[in-house]
Image (cartoon, rainbow, N blue to C red; front, top):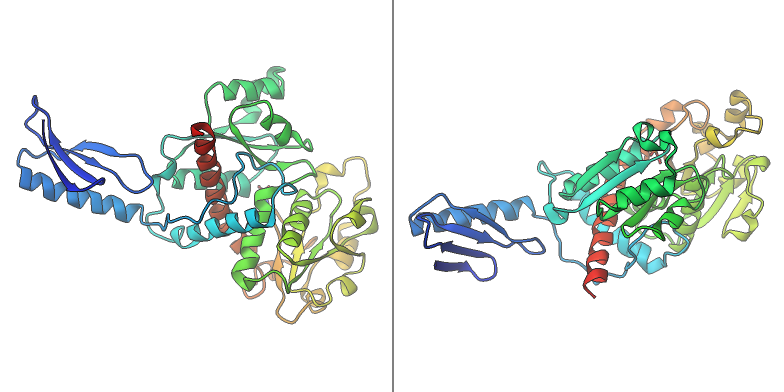
Length: 382
Ligand code: CP
């Protein structure tokens, strides 16, 4: 076999004895090598084709994949309570790289080519499900959306049997949203795949809190001088719980504000100050994070009158004045306009970070998928 190395470790040409055509073997940093025919019988021509193809691939995957030493070493992301400050900072650092990348014309980087990821959403979702799908596809992985309403769960199959069945297809990651608290953690103990919690009951929503932290970091960089208000239905909100944990670990001070009946009994055990009055609770806050009223979890209790709720706890320009002069507004979505937040304020891009949160969701989820898969690779190889 004839061969010629054009760039050591990266571009090699070779011609098999039974072929007239030059083949190329291209190896980009951090990616699997690619073999293809140059389509040419002439070495000089094949050299030009291989170099051109290599540089096109390089441009396509032109993302800074120089990585800091990996500090986040987990193979599951099921709760924020077991994340150390350094791990959170590392995920945010990795996520930041994808922000500009996601604005490029060509958003594809095949660092997760050949990997299989399942979206298993047993509750409704727009942002989380689609942003995991976008994230996985941009990284080159195969993502399968399991349509739960059409699945064999409806024929009486247990959740664990469904997970075991999907696990037998050798997936790398299962992304699970489910109404039961703690279910992602339990599943992570019974499958070989990695598990990402995309929201479990009123318990946790780790990637939401990470994307919220990234949104805030983009505006303020440092968390240690920040006061953040989390307002509304604290009791039923997994977003509130994960944000309290993540943002306080990063050094921010947290005020929670909501009706007394929607404050968890153990709220005083969390690193927060508690208020029932927006006027007092919003004082000196840099960020006002509104929450959705979790109607689906308030089945046996009386829902407040929407007008009365908005008057006391809905965020409008008047209440926003209680916070710092240029305070920003956040909402994880989906939002109930005119109940949790005034519609014009939600759309005011000078104050509202709501659409920015959605964009950061893709970046954070790309980082989480990549980090977890790299950790799995190391785990399996070691
Ligand atoms: N914030 C959030 O979890 O939104 P979805 O329910 O649309 O995923």
